[in-house]
Length: 343
Image (cartoon, rainbow, N blue to C red; front, side, top):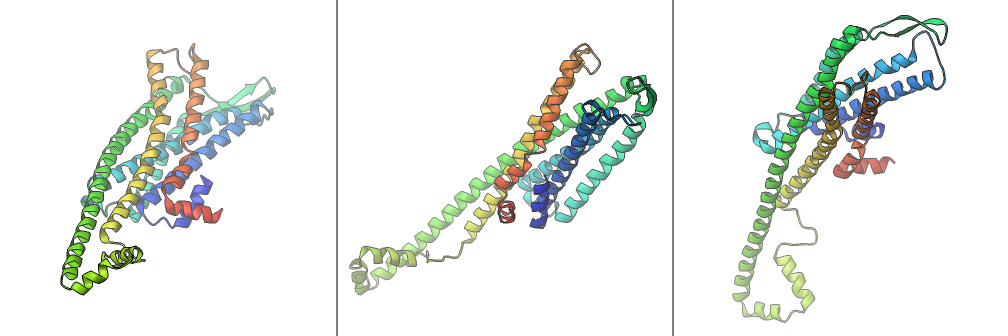
């Protein structure tokens, strides 16, 4: 993610898609850094027996909630990316100038501020610490207080928001947008390809008729033409049919190139969205399993299996946030060129 941030910054972030990808990389990086901090804090307490006044173990329990905040920012950013590409491909004339660079920056700033404003005060108030005597150190320490209010009312709300509402709504929107823009873009690419071929055939047909007229107007021209050697014939035909050594790219070919570039951008968005869906689907499955089997929870009979599932979910999330660099290298030629020139 650090490499991706450096390369994106060097590209200049000249369009709305690049701005969204840059914002997504920032939130992914912050989420991973927070996860890493929580892991290190837990290791200091459990593996290295570091026991300060504030329990590092319980701090490592609370910190992932803020990692979840950054992960939610990434989810919303992916939704914005999918909607943006869907609108631009499905209705290009209406949304051509809607998602400009400046507006994309404003959208992403609002995403960050909105989620932080609704997340930080809530978690700060509902995740209390209090002094408690620790028999392992024979001292009073500040630990996380698992109150009845937190277990019965607060945590279920956090769970419903972060493991049901956001994943399900986001996956539905992303899947719908991805399917729609893929269909429309393939139709557009097929139409432009056929139009380019028809245009090229028409130019060759007109030039061929003109060539035949000129050849038939003069017997000497016909004689010279038919007595020319095969290499000279080929060279002559290439020149007369409008294919010089360094031809100017026709407008239809430029349109086709633009379509291919747009298609590759859409492929990148689709792949990022697909990875997101695959990595978030287990969240929904685990949540519904906990509803069907109440003992399948952090404090129930099957708490160890539940904990294992949560750890696997975290692993999938980390993989999801760590592979986007390879997507950019695959589908973004400018990104790949700057990356290779830098390293």
